[in-house]
Length: 354
Image 1 (cartoon, rainbow, N blue to C red):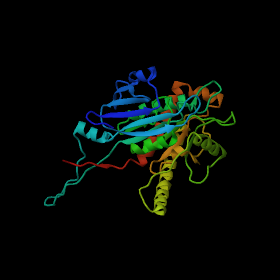
Image 2: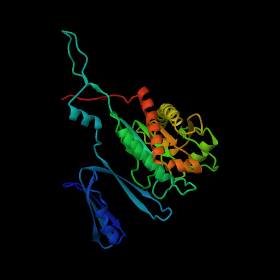
Image 3: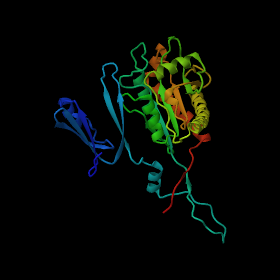
Image 4: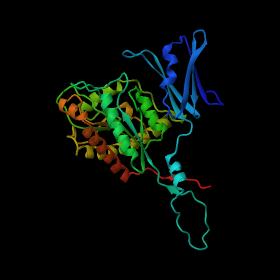
């Protein structure tokens, strides 16, 4: 990182400068929130330097991806703001409104308090698969990664239209995101809920219906749940959760307590969503199932995985490609989320007064 002005500099050794690197600047969208320009050039023999001119201070997250399919080794940089935007603070600043404090009786000593302000719920939407990982394929050639992104985008637009909710996508285009990075993104934005959207296949083509899964600490609740979880988790290796406690036994106890409570709320969220999906599609199972999906393993964010339908079923594959049906699925998931939040709203945020 380089200051005044803010820049991120990356030197790549053993790389030759070529036309593809020269055209990188054209890849930066004008509306990019963090990158102003991207420059590449030969720094010294055998070393190519990339310079990202930044619009603001960022905190980069770096990870590598091993070769897969037609892709070689890749170095991935995710840019996050050092200070995450606070939609509540922006709302208050724009309106200049705060809830009234309780009136005090005459003669009562007033003590300054931080008023409690209802805050927006942050919902992280996770379109399954992406990039070189297409997910399941239908007989008509449909790819799970395309359908999940389309439904997630529709759902995001609906959530963002709600006055007290906002949505964040783990991917907003066709690129690969490791499972642990998906979980990390949810925790980084302090998500209230995490919803992973899928349209998977089963080894039996007649399998049909919508399903909702929550995490299982022990074992999956059905053969399909075990099969799907194993298939999804093979996408990449997932690490553990860092807890800043030196005593490993205390750390494990704290993690277990947090995970147990989170799974309980995941099941509640899942039941609300499943009930709404049942108004749109046949249910594969009449209850929320549990499996060891790696993407659901955040210890402090209620998380569910929604199988919108089975892309391996020709009839359901056709419906999944229908825009009206995609809207129906998105609205059903939104209705389920709203039902859950009505009973379990986000905790109010204390707002300091000047």
